[in-house]
Figure (tube, one colour):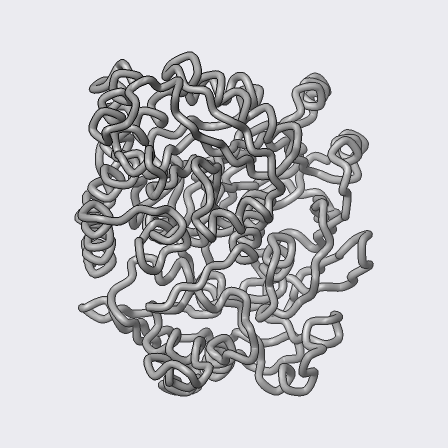
Amino acid sequence: MKKIRNVAILIIVLVMCLGTLAGCGKTEDSPVVTGDTNDINKNELQMDKEQVYKYSDNSDITGLNPMANTTGPDNNVQNFIYETLVADVADEEGNGIIKPAAAKDWTISEDGTIYTFNIREDAVWNDGVPVTANDFLFTFRTMATPEVGSTNAWLFDGVILNFGESLYNDGTNPDYNKKPEDIGVKVVDEKTIEFTLVKPYGYFLDLLAGAKPVRQDKYEEFGDNYGSSIDKIVMNGPFLMESWDQNVQITFVKNESHWDAKNMKLEKIERKLIQDPATAVQALISGEIDVVTTNDPNWKELIIEDGRFESMVIPNNAPEFLGFNAKNKYFKNPKIRLAFSLAYDREKYIEDLREGEGEPLYSVMPGVTNVGDKLYSERVNGQNEVLKELMKKYPDPKALLIEGLKEEGLDPDPAKMDISYATRGTTEYSKKSAEWLLQQWQEKLGVEIKIDMIEWNVMWDRVDAGDYDICTAGWGPYYNDPNAILELYEPVNGYFNSTKSGWTGPDAERYAEILEEASNSPDNQKRAELFVEAEKLLVGTGVIAPTYCKTSTVFLAKYVKGYYTNPHSSIDYSLMHISGK
């Protein structure tokens, strides 16, 4: 299976996941809830006459073409105007759920490889044309066309039958010789579409929730200009884009033709562009917007004292971690790698560098990660936090380091080690983070490490070439499953493959086998247990050192009701209304 994840894709993923509340990844997560539970019955709700919700973002969108959806803002805006077969949204408990959208229902074959979706009879585009199975067939065939360059198409490589073999068919590799019409997507009838997978994928619905449709006649009519403006698209979502004043505001209005219009209370949504965080906070206080995210302690105090807003802490789904180059003469030894991982206090890191905003990681998986419909950590009773047990087993990481040095026949004096730490950028935070880590390692291991302050893109170039000792990295998963993170270190096809990580040998080979076994299993409990095995190899031998994942504090006007969110799922706007403004 061909997996190409270059630096551009990495940045896109991080922007989408770290810059938005409803970015990537799906399914059930730790609940974050505010507002009143909504019975969907308008008569029982005390609703204001004006149902307008206002929010801000710090970046404009690049366009409205789902094939060229490259940023978090693009994705969030397109969620309003395009409806996928299924939706991944937060429910009243704040849990992420997969719910019917353009498809009213679906069936899955006993072996988990064939998904059949029945499209709603009353699903229509905004010009009155019915939504059909052919719309989704055309969408996926277009995604699988190499010349199109669909930005998110790689997600379905190795998932949908023959998809990657078409997507990467450049005429030079006999293993990639399929055409878009060969992919495992077919129309059964006008309102029924079928997907055939390479093997069972428990997170296929999560992926599908992000596949926004384009209609063939309009896509071909507008060509390269599709999505460049409102008049060069057709929409089938719960809202229609009324206006797009670039770098100022986007306005959405309720789609009265949408099949679920009767349950949508909001009549209008205004998205304002506010780049300065302080200006956004001021806009919240003045009533220009209804919600803001800030981690600035001064602004947080001001908003709390105001008394008109609710607050919630949103955990993130993107882990930050250190990588140790296993080709290095020191870090080829797992004891040396692990010593460095155990020798810094993750909770103190968050306290000292992030003003308490963050979640310490002892597993590479943030706490909101799911396997199927349950939290990963709950399925395995916390056994995924392998570093906690290792901290008990090795209370003196310096002794472990010296043991590793002796095994390699190297000078056992840690002070003689020659190691550099490559920063991920040259910001003040990058500098402080590096200095903090180096102080921890000096105090607990007795090592003196050089800081190599380099720009973001230079660091990634060096990682690609395997030219580093220690680096820092992060990843925002596109779907809510441990595989989305663990596959990064698959030694052949992963983003951080053995060329970049230097990780080879029996442990790396076994790691690949575990991931393949988990991928083939339809049993989510079995998969979760396999992922723990994988973490014991990846984290337990110090190939990477999970550090933390971010958290964000959201402040919401109390008159906004039915606002439910979590880090993986989109907001279900059918549950929202304005009351008491």
